[in-house]
Amino acid sequence: MVGEDRRALAAQLRRLLSWEIRDEQDLTLWYAAAQEVNGWLKAPRSVSVPRELWRWLAEADLRFADPDYASRQNGFIQRYIGELESAAE
Image (cartoon, rainbow, N blue to C red):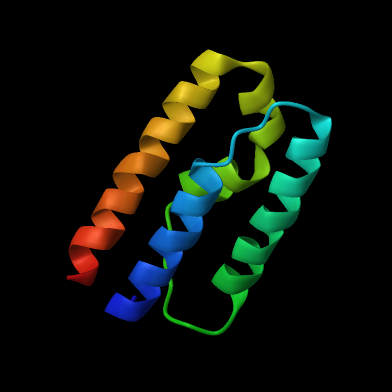
């Protein structure tokens, strides 16, 4: 993945990570935004991402219901964003 792609993905993930999900409507909106990231990742580019990212994009409802699970998944995504940003420099 080139630096520009890493920065773009990091920014998209940071936006989703900062999204506070308080109710079902927030969850629906989060999933709509996550679909945009899915589309970006599936576009032709040299992007290789860990399977945990795909899981994170698909499991917001589980994080909403289980704060401990949310903490573990979000911790991984925070570290992954840091890796993307470091590699983009």
